[in-house]
Image (cartoon, rainbow, N blue to C red; front, side, top):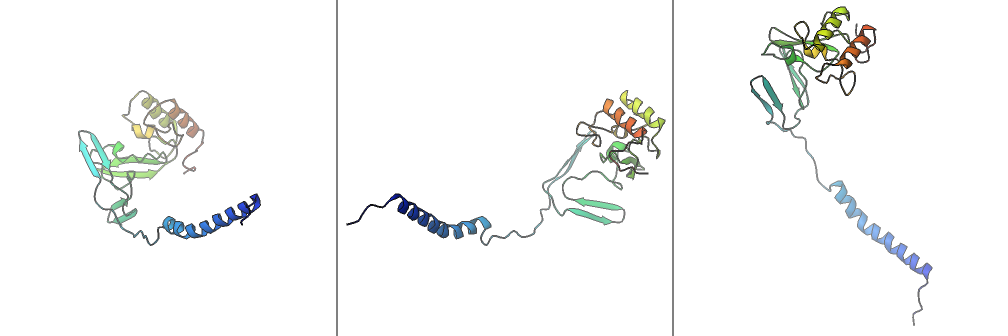
Length: 194
């Protein structure tokens, strides 16, 4: 006749069963987690995206990242990947500096003869003269009064809500503070470009 199993024996039996079950289940679980023989092959997603325009507005769209990287030829640069900022060499059919704005406070972007030109500049050089001076302050004061006849809105927009180096599409006191820093040779964004 069988005698009862004590607590210690039950624990030993439970541990043995748990370990045995783990060895039986684990290989198939690992095969499922690793994908078994599943393979992701390199491919490309072409087509989709594009632009639509009406009036003075243009909307750019993308369906996916394809062939990320730059392709160059003649005077053109094609940037593959998700939507890229405008760069030098792109066409600006409207003839405005806004079409060439790359949202980088360390470049002076302008439309010259229908083509975007983007040159490295000093932080705070709003008028593109190569120096931060009183004329940049005049441009800032004009910008605070919504006057952009001498300097573009994009050049005056130095600072934003997410940081001093990220423009926010609003000309306000923070842009003036950023320019005052630049006039005092403080350059938190461009690494002190000459």
